[in-house]
Length: 156
Image (cartoon, rainbow, N blue to C red; front, side, top):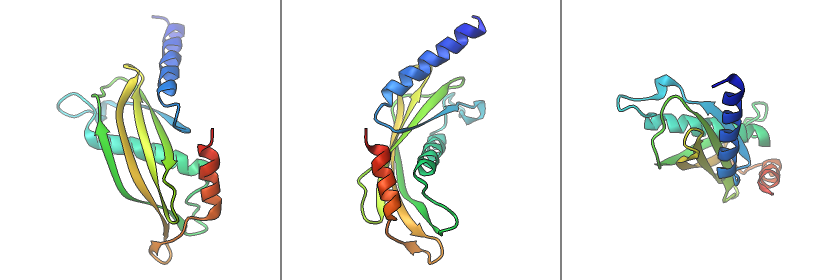
């Protein structure tokens, strides 16, 4: 296979993953590393939480959440993952992130991981993000600008 065909194949796989993750406004592409696999020959379960973290941080960057100067930022209160299919090296993944259920001091994030090789969702998860005042060490209300940024990013 020539380099041009490999590039075209990768672009087609990315487009298929993007279609699978169409409801997620933030998308990151991550290569699957050999060292992420376990003795059973698939990506270890704990690694998916790192994938979620990468998408979550990209989402926070897009909405400007967690600026160190204010001392107000996100803290992950809980997280979960549903594994739907094994993921193996070599592959690339697309990880989508979106917010829902925005409340006074928290919101829920949803994640989905799509494998480029199989062009399907291999895992889905969620996380409860609480707004935290790192100076007073307690939760606090979400800043209005963050709520507005979430609404803008989530709108079609």
